[in-house]
Image (tube, rainbow, N blue to C red):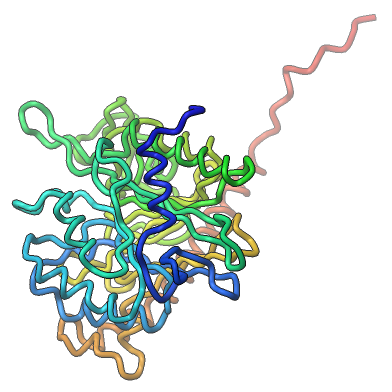
Length: 412
């Protein structure tokens, strides 16, 4: 570990402690803090992916999601606003500002594709709105708006928890312009994470500060853990990574809790991010978006991969899963967290909801989704239990293999 922390690192840490905010989740000094009851709630909105004018149902959903969940922080998890028309920012962010909830963000693969609107200018547009906590800790790093935000203890000024925000990049192409795959968190970003993590630990008496990381694109290591390896490449029918690894699109259903309705579009390569997180010991979970119709939690070597479903009404979505993710932290147990979906169907069928009034989906459609969700959940659990029982039964049927490593009996 470096003994001398760079000026950029010091500035970024100070910024994470002093960003301007207000109301929910923040104290009078604008710093995120656990509530008096020792809780902290995060509302994650992934893949809003909208243009101007923002879909009416999307605005209604955000309003009602905030009013229902009462979050202390809102996180946009990438592919946020897909236009350079700043009126879309006003439409999307004004309901959040009006409710006094601070927010931060990461950029996704589509954000850099917005014409004539570089990420740095997009970040500056977000920062015009009261309560925006996003900043760029080190502009020299890959991507934009890599940063961290600390959450203070409810009863003191010590750092109790930390939130990481990483830019996982966009699309990659070869020299001929052919699409290769999606980008990933790069070596310089990982190094920044490690240095900042160690600096926080040093301030914390040598103990790492527990944390959660937000980024848009799922890391390559997750696909290698959650999907079956393929003996051969079948082009677009398999995952083909830059290190020669080939994986099928068939998920290992017993390796995750939730739903995988589409292939996980992960990074094309890796600079060792997951290994760094496992070794670091501070990150409880990595929260991603990108795959709109997937929603699951998977433990990968002690770090959870948390897939957030798409909130979008402008792009593709799954009726059952469309919505947001809630993450709840408890100051009394900072080595764990609670997470669950908050679906648009759940809110749209509540008395007084205006979500269905937009006409994007009928009230009947939302009601059917509410009926199907628990049924499908039950079927998935039954399917997993059946596979486990079959695997256990198959294991009992297998003949016992003698231990050939045991020393032979001495010959008399």
